[in-house]
Length: 294
Image 1 (cartoon, one colour):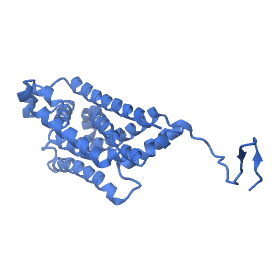
Image 2: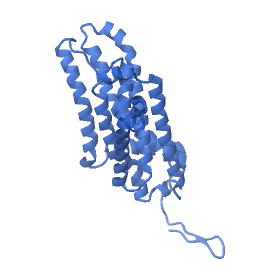
Image 3: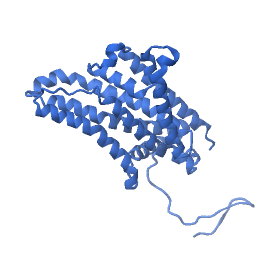
Image 4: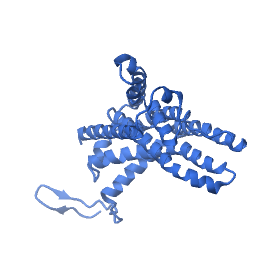
């Protein structure tokens, strides 16, 4: 410890002998990456106790097993049984909603509950950077999870063929529906989940708000034609399982009885709607972060 250096008659600077940081400064972009990485890991419970990994593991297994079973059945029947996604997308969306409700508050509510968000915003991280990093981590994690069973379906169709090369020429173009369906699912569910999770520091309240919002919206959408006399297809847009299921069947060229009774909207209508839902969620998240006092 050195002697004090007198600056003015009323203030002094003391060198306490701490080692100075001489490494690289990562700046604002590095801070954004750190927030994204931490949020992405939190969505899967990585770096935390085994209890935090239960729901991510449960959702992954319950969404992969039905598709794996269908691929196995198609393989054993040598292609007689066709692989279809029609009956799987709706239940998958329900599981993804459960996962977002359980994990999104871990990414956004904890920072407010432990009062570290104002501290984060005093550094190189702007409010916009914080909101975009957290939202991107939730959407990216959800995209990865939503893509897994659809990618298994895509690979399964090629793998069970007696001659994979011609089958790949026919099936190869389906990679776009696989990516598009997973991306739109992640944007819609992730945007809403992030917005609701950001408005309360209590994780339990955030989880209840996300589940309650999706449940109420689904119930209203299923009965909107009887309540307000509108087309069932417009009411379907309020129900994520039904809307995303119909969108998926349009992407993969499948139909069900509900589509035969009532023609669906154009696929562009479903895509634009889910993009709009994600944009509204992002706007609400940004509004909440801007209201936080540093």
